[in-house]
Image (cartoon, rainbow, N blue to C red; front, side):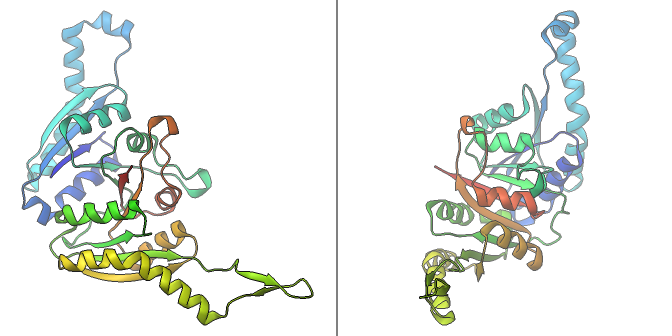
Length: 299
């Protein structure tokens, strides 16, 4: 596996390094890890005054301030990595390097925003998701897992996006540890809108409680069944989790209450023109949860 880790020297970047060093099973298979520092270009007028030689030295020095501590932290943990810098706007440069280098995964720290402020991720992370179709692991203000084997929530809805997430997990399972547990989460409708008016115009339910539960179970089994079999065929431990309500809220709440280490979900990919907004469920989870989120894009 080839992993690109963009860093900027912030606390959020440190989370990325800490997560990498926590992945014993993955590291045992010698992944290629590359650190990337993106330097903002010096304005044209100033660059002419500085000169090409001095400008290159300036970029080298600024990048080394960011990259060297990260390299040392990885080295102290016995992790080998390469490092480079590029000059340009952060998100397009990260996306370009990821595509050109053939990265299998991008790991990024992100501050995120509260649900009240619009459900958007940090602007750089958000834009990277818009500009390339590589899987992106978004880390927040949460310590790296202490165990190699992770508790992983997998959002499954029966769509091709959920299937893409499952396929990615089964192909790249080393990152989740030697003996991970996968919680296969599906959110079903509460069927609260299934009503009919009585003769007095009052709304009455058309189904009783047992009928609603039967419909929910049928919907859940249809969505989760094939994915569970795929995990079991590979020998992985799974738990079936049926949730009811708003998908983003319920998945985020379950992740917090169960102490999940990671959430994985597939979502439709967007081009830059569509402004880098994730599918509504992924956006909601990213906005209100501090659980790391691995986004698998499918077109």
